[in-house]
Amino acid sequence: MLDAPLRSAPRGLELHCRGWEQEGALRCLLNNLDPDVAEDAGALVVYGGRGRAARSPEALADIVAALGRLGPEETLVVQSGKAVAVLPTHPDAPRVLISTAMVVPAWSDEDSFRRLEDAGLTMYGQMTAGGWFYIGTQGILGFTYETFRAVAEAHFGGTLAGKRVLTAGLGGMGGAQGFAVTRNGGRALVVEVDPLRAERRLKDGWVDLVAGYDDALAAHLDPGGPGTVALVGNAADVVPRLLAESVQFDVVTDQTAAHDPLRGYVPRGFTAEEAAGAEPDDARFRSAVFDSLAAHVRALLGYRDRGAVVFEYGNGLRAQAVAHGVEEADSISGFVSAYVRPILARGIGPFRWICLTGDAADLRETEDVVMDVVNTDSLRAWIELARERVPLQGLPARICWLGLGERDRVALALNELVRSGACGPLALGRDHMDPASVASPTRETEGMRDGSDAIADWPVLSALLNAAQGASWVAIGNGGGVGVGRSIHSGMVVVADGSELAERKIRRVFWTDPALGVARYADAGYPEALAEAERHGLVIPP
Ligand code: NAD
Image (tube, rainbow, N blue to C red; front, side, top):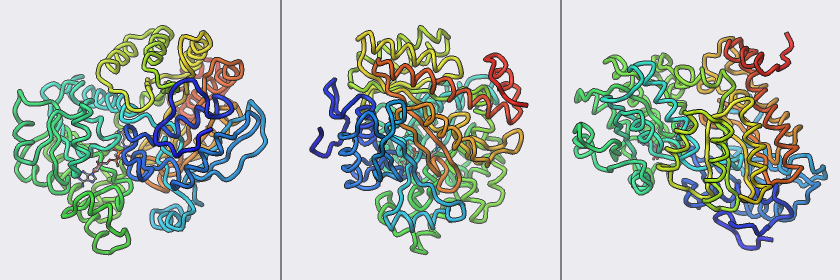
């Protein structure tokens, strides 16, 4: 049993719970809050603005204690970051069920949500923060790389060589942008208002130089200069200034946490610290945020007028700008509809796993198995790149993009590996941004072929299905990525401890979960999904 409040996951094979499923949930929850993983572990903020893993320190302690006692025939129920019940179930049921930030739709707006949050009734959980399966910057790295690769293919003949990218935000996800741009041959200038965040990315090797306006710009414009330069400044000042000074860019985007503007977007004239301490209801602060956001978006539109490729990077910036007087922001395209849709439409999404014992040697073993099972050049290239370039953050973890027919084979092979004793127990799962598991009309489901952008039955069905199939934990949430009221999403994890029970769960979950993704896109009429459905003999009623 754990008696002290922990700030990182336990390592090794000694159990602190009554079985590996519970232990896996405990370790993944605490891994989310490891100071090396979380953006602000002290405040329980994992990533994405204020995406938390537990509602309060007391609630965290209660969850940890409940997991420590949880039996193999019980299920812990977690309501928005707080343990609310331990109920009798059965071994094949999930050990934990999590629902985060769900609010009746008419109350699902930022101000109502904040009032409920201030009353201690809920919390914002982003996607894998509340779902206990965040793996640090790496989680978004492959995705960001694929996005910039698609940008290169769509506009620049397949490479960003000789191209310069302007963006903002070096947070948990935004921190991956420079790596993704440079691996595609380009160079990136990333505006970040918080010098501490910029320094953190420098220390972790995600940016090459941190400097103020003049030095950063000079280094970026020097063809022999560093690949990724962090410019410490406010995007609402810097982007309009660069435009006014006619500094040209080929691609312009943004990854400030604008989905939660009063908490995640620092207005002009404020330091990051001052903005964090400001009162969201203060009229002066509110107008500073929305004026800044509008100025920033007008500059993005200015860059588009000058011929740059401009897109919203999933942070809800357009909707905020439209709501505050910049109607034209609506015409900026979203990155998923513009670049990622063809991947999702094949039912492919971000599979990931965490080595629960913390042993980096386990990661190598598992990667070898994954490369053996899915023997493609692109997967091998990604894993080799990740091995070389991605620093470990918290428990060793890896992500790769897999679809139907791959995930179940990989997951079963990994469970076999654990059974053989060649590696310790693993947590296998995926991000919430999978084909069926998210409805987010300004991001993952923007511009769906059949207009089903806002239909949120799919993530709910996905969670129900994964619970029915006995995933070790299943999470559903509101607002991940784009802000409360703007998305519904779900995630799941199965602990592979080499047991027969794990094998049963894996066989069921890792077939039906991606199959629902194919069904979602087939239902929307995507030919790629219809072909996948036929190839795998999925029963899709007419
Ligand atoms: P985060 O909160 O960890 O980081 C946001 C960063 O933006 C912080 O470092 C903050 O200091 C900086 N910032 C805020 N206001 C600024 C300003 N005016 N000028 C310059 N910097 C400013 O958030 P994150 O996890 O990195 O996510 C960023 C956004 O990207 C979120 O809205 C997220 O939902 C969205 N997003 C990204 C992807 C992706 O594929 N990369 C996918 C989905 C969503």
